[in-house]
Image 1: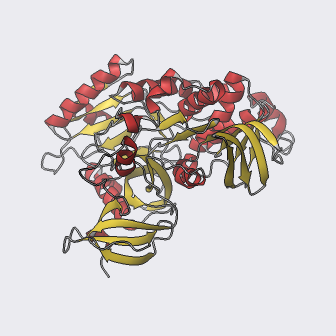
Image 2 (image 1 turned 120 degrees about the horizontal axis):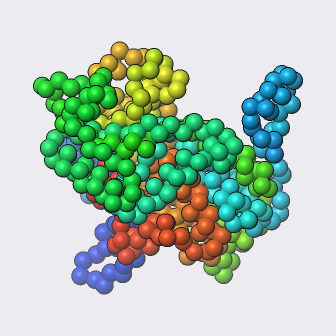
Image 3 (image 1 turned 180 degrees about the horizontal axis):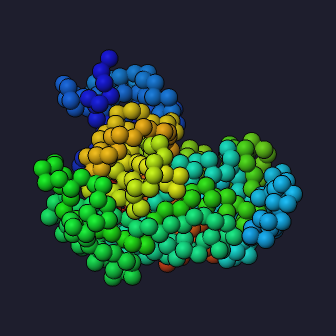
Amino acid sequence: MRSQNEFSYGGDATVKRPELNKDISDQEWNDFVYNRKSLRGKHWELWQHLSGCRQWIKVERDTATHEIFNTLKANEDISQ
Amino acid sequence: MQKYSIFNLVKNALSNHENWDLAWKDPTPKKEYDVVIIGGGGHGLATAYYLAKEHNITNVAIIEKGWIGGGNVGRNTTIIRSNYMYDDNALFSEFGMDLWRSMSQDLNYNVMFSPRGIINLAHSDAQMNIYARRGNSMRLNGIDAVLLNREQVKEIIPMADFSENVRFPIFGGLMQPSAGTARHDAVAWGYARQADSMGVDIIQNCEVVGFDVSNGKIKGVRTSRGDISAKKIGLCVAGSTNILAEKLNMTLPIETHLLQACVSEPVKPVLDRVVTFGAGHFYISQSDKGEMVMGGDLDGYNSYAQRGNLPTLQHVLTEGIAMMPFLSKLKMLRTWGGIMDMSMDGSPIIDKTHIEGLYLNCGWCYGGFKATPASGWTFAHTIAQDRVHKLNSGYSLNRFNTGHLLDEKGLGTRTWIS
């Protein structure tokens, strides 16, 4: 168990940057840069263990209860 | 409606205050309204009031999941100010300052508006330069601003730490003398009482479960107390905006985050201004009851919890003690949290949407309370006239597509970063 103080938040982990070398619409950029679901309940998000091993991880957390259901390495895909 | 006055107070005192009228009714929802406002907070109640007062639209319902005034209007630190640099923010907020000054008379309800002035402290030469620039921008927009040097600040708030050998010495500050505080609950209750008296139905304990939209046009709203048809619907639900947006298949440039505030035990009058720490995020004022009212950073991750965690509170109060060391002697009386609709540039959205008859009021970040009257006034105009007013033209939803952001703090999209 690590203290919350050691971690830094990195935002929604489900957002994907549009692919390179493709025609990308303004709407696609908009969805990547600005638009977020940010719902109540389960939420996949990025955290960095800033005051520790400095690794980025993906965490599935409940935004109302803060219960943590799942964690993944940053390069692992979210299966749901 | 029964007027609140000294005569009525005396008259009702004679009957032990048992015969006062109810401040607002508890109606059963009708089948149809001209306008339905979702969210019985400050902004929703103000919108309904100005719809009735300015646009003569009184067939209006406010529907509220809980009780009116139970969200952020009852949870904020009551600061009212218009010390913005960008024209869109400055002119909108200053319009609101005029509404604040006349609000108690206008609503026949004492909102205890106290224009005691706000001081933003500066802790470096660079920060003094930035505040000089911001103060000049404010004055160009007709807003009062005074740049104070270290001695002038010391005269006003001698209890702050003016030692030389501290990490963040006080160099001076920017003051807006006309800024201040108000009794937040009274704002909600005052708007509710007047709106009700003009025919608005205030419907509490009524949760929105869905919307009726056909051919790109809003038809009504489905609630826990039955379906309600409406020609126009306005969303004023702050931290719950994304929950309703999902029911409308909309994704918005909004994230919901948690902000905490706290009050100390009441002490004798010591601080007669609002003061903000310039080297972090901490603000403080003293309530009429004597409590020190304090707040600061967001908890920093998406949250609907309406209660905070200790690390952020500890961080914020560390800043407070650095600024005013006497705070360390006080006991904490109460802490609480509210959920903020953090927009991606730190500025709000008051606009029409791609759905005809659906209007959006959100993205207030942690500055919603001071905006209550101006937000209600401009949102009522936008709904009634089906077009935005000049005052809220900068608060368009489309600005995220076109790049006309109102990034007052220069933080980029991660407005929750501390």
